[in-house]
Length: 125
Image (cartoon, rainbow, N blue to C red; front, side, top):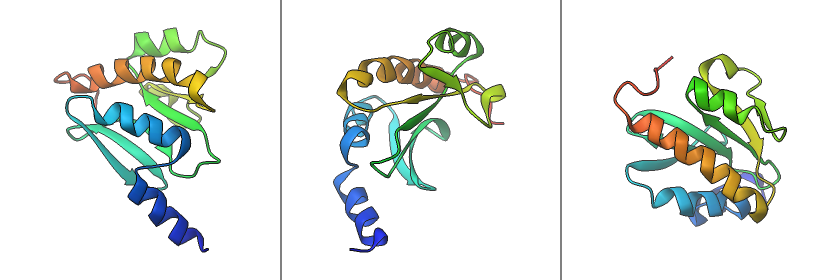
């Protein structure tokens, strides 16, 4: 099976593995739109991207955009790291390897979602 066919099937199912669980959880949150983009699931509130997760099941790095205060708190956890390119814009990375990692990921995602939903809550740069 070609990788294109596999990706289309993944998209049709709404993700696989951890991505599917994240998509199911975030899909129930008010105002969240989930869109595949550039090999990742993009999580939006309106036009604001607040997180993204890989489409491929082998990749596990969740990217989350937080306020400066929340980013500092998140980086106190040794399992969370600054995003390799966008740390100065409030982005962090954390790995979601399986169900035990979901509560931690959802906690930071909920903060990012709340921040993105506020008027002027996340700058567009």
